[in-house]
Image (tube, rainbow, N blue to C red; front, side, top):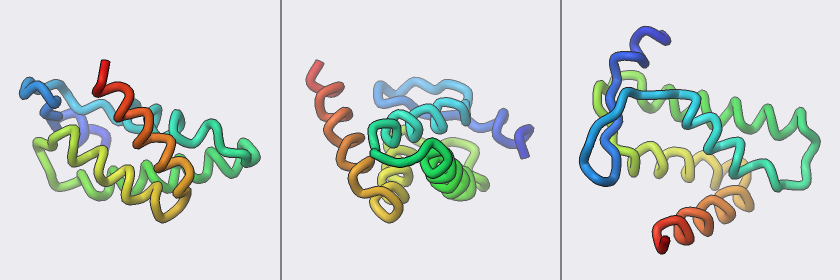
Length: 98
């Protein structure tokens, strides 16, 4: 499966492509969840659950836009950890203003 992931390309917001890097997705999810008042084990479990849903969503795609990945992450966070989804949305808004 990892070999399939290496063949994927992600279209960034500016229109250029970069190789798919699953660690970037995991890091983003971890960042959104890190400030929740939960035990580390629960946070790790949530990261893995959201990450696996995103990877499943991407499995048949060769190219995927960053916005699609973000939308899927937010959809899963909304289900599992609405507060983390809120934190992520606020972070993205601030980042886009810079």
